Length: 216
Image (cartoon, rainbow, N blue to C red):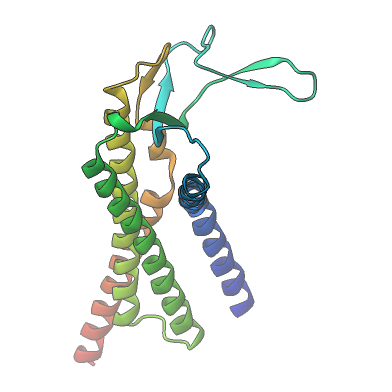
């Protein structure tokens, strides 16, 4: 029984890590780009005067769309790309420093929420391995897990919405609209509400158990 539980827990952890992999990879490459830009500036190397923003888009014409292209290294041909999530550079003079600070705070909020959610999940699994299952501590951890994941999703969604608005002020894409619809495919929101649902199921079960104990 515990072997099956361990496999399920491992699957949940892997699912959460995979769903967060895009966030952490984006943070890593953004941090690395900042370090590289600083080193190039210190070495006197001329750098591009642009700020990169992560945006969400929705192609309006999937047949003749030529919004983006890439080179096929196998035969040297050019292939069309339909972008849904992209990084796009805008001139630094068009990038508001206040917005950049706010977006950085949102990014840190997402990372903190993700780490907090993982900690709560690990603590709950530790209790389950100690045969402490239907306990109010687990209910609290499930609620914290759910709310932290929902907050993580909301911060990420706001980040995309703000970036879309900022970029749309200076750039207009052909055959492509700015959209945050693709962001709703992120399973973080579903996992968060599922955690809250299980928390309420546990809470109802505990209340019924306490009422039965008082009756006896």
